[in-house]
Amino acid sequence: MDAQDSTDPARMLRSRGLRVTPQRLAVLAALAASPEHLSAEDVYEEIRETMPSVSLATVYNALGELRRSGQLRTLPVAGRVRYDLVSRGPHHHLVCENCHRVVDLDPDGLATPVPPQERAKGFEILTAEVIFRSICPDCRAAGTPVGTPVGSAASNVDAVAGGQ
Image 1: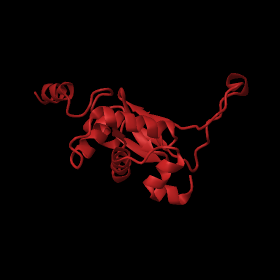
Image 2: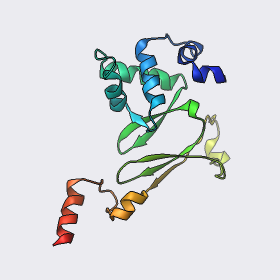
Image 3: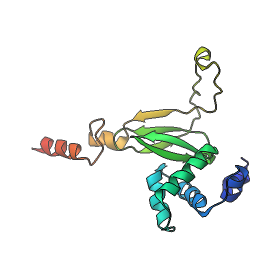
Image 4: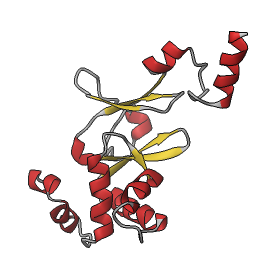
């Protein structure tokens, strides 16, 4: 993909052999406009505001086509898939195991993971990424136990019990 493709979604779709549809353009626009890593449901909620007739199935189909064409990477977070635009360049992720916040991490200064030759025999490595599972500063400051989402009933019970 050339630099112009990353700024012209219609051109990018055509260059990947995909039809330019309002739904695909809306999915790309929602992902590009958000600083967050959106799930299919998040994208659907964003698109519904301007395209009320769109279905969740259509959003899933568009995301699948965009992923297969190499425009999106997927990121598993708390049992849900989130999407990231490849055009944002290579980077790693920090993921909070409590609140599920995702932060992009510049790969500069980090070694690229390389699998042992004997285990990768016959594989063509396409990409490598690192996901740092962590506890974010907000969750650490709140003292939230690992695995308990902030604001959950369990963390509220702990807060009440601790306050008695």
